Length: 332
Image (cartoon, rainbow, N blue to C red; front, top):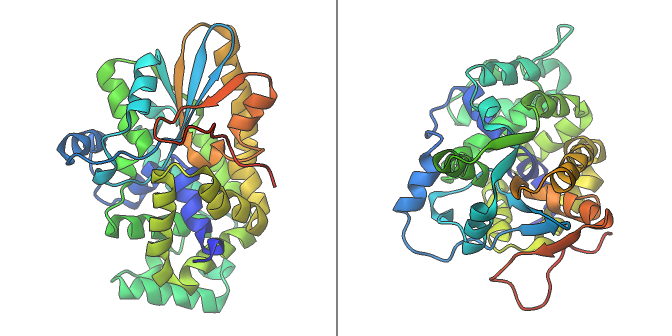
């Protein structure tokens, strides 16, 4: 399968904690925030996913960087012992967006407002007519009308389509690793925080260029039958903790095909987060578990390598990996 068809999946599964907000804004029924934790209890014994987990240390404390997949299944739980130990060691748990913002009553409304147009535009006016017709036919086959999304930008349509596909394959944002650990932190009474605000994430989405939004949407509409396999392939690479495969499937292709979107959703956010992570290491003695989309930890422009370059001790925590040290892939 061609990695070029993964852009839409990458946006949602490995970059954006706002997947939960998409669910709220579309008005679809979704499990409660504790559903992932309940699924973990109910799931049969199995081999847990290999975590994308790094420990970053200075002289007096550490932060654990954990790569999340924002769309998971009940069978992805329980988590590995490596994650359990990092969670136990952390005095606080930090996410992309603070849990109270993700779960605020107005989150869905804010998402829809960010996805709307200005200056009288609409979806039919910004999409090529043939692409618009493909979208209309796809929605009709699903028993939906295109009028209900006419007021929203292509990036919102992208994410909504993927959410619908994910649900049909038993993936759910409410079972994502970040949502699971929000529930665990709440139950354990651990303080939580965010590296950015919900508005920061919405602004980044809304700033993505229209032509690149349409590139991602076109990939979905040209071969919708391939998307289930692509999502499964990406999910399996995450479950395997396979840094190289994830980098090939996601970061490199996204950087090539939609460079401005890659910069806005990945690189610029990484650059804003690194000083906050350095402050956690430099300014107090508390250990923290930091849970972000897995793509943010990959490559030379990822958070892991930026902190390594800043002089911190960095090691991957991976009991299931081979004895050889495992690091992020060589930059290309």
